[in-house]
Amino acid sequence: MRRSLAALLLCACATSLAGCNLSSLICGAEEERAVTVNSDPTLAYMRAPGAAPTQLTLISRVTDFELGEAAFGELFSAVERGADLGRGVVLAMTGDDPATGETVALYLALPTPLRSGTTIPVGGAFQVPLGDVGSNHLAPRTLADPSRAEVAFRSGTYHFPPPEWRTTFVATQASGTVRVTSRYGQGFALQLDLTVTDAAGRVARLQGRAGAFSERYTPPCT
Image (cartoon, rainbow, N blue to C red; front, side):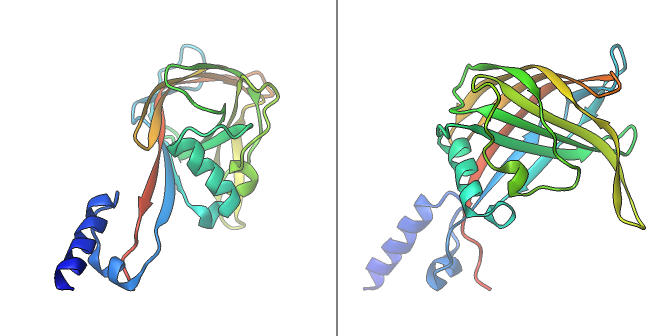
């Protein structure tokens, strides 16, 4: 009996992506999942044609707690397995502009399935508010053109009191490409070349690498 129990624990540890947590195995803690989307730290952000670029680091990590089980399940399967959702998968990244202190939000709605080597043209822009990551904005999105990506881009500052976001740039048009440069075990890498324009005609550009990966892990017992 002792030998069988030890073998069972070793087997469970060997097959766990998150490593071995004996207390979790013994207490029966359930597996949890997450999706992380992030840019390379050298993502270049040019606020105007010919302007010196600022390097942005954008990231988000979401679970079914934020999105709800159904929306998260579709996001997870598109990232981990490259599933075809019949709609666009929405990837969100946020961070701070070190030059201005503004918060920057970038959302990519990409046609699925995402295959390595595919270059996806950007067909237009969509809208999301700052500071609001939820199932309404990260659920799979019906694209105007199923073969083209859509981009949401917004920057702004948070003020308190009263608590409010003040927008400094919101894209009303978007063009460029998103290339899936590779797929690996639980995710994929992207190369971004995006141009966004606001209602006043101001143009900004983002160029660099990004990606998404899925996680499966078992939290420790409490």
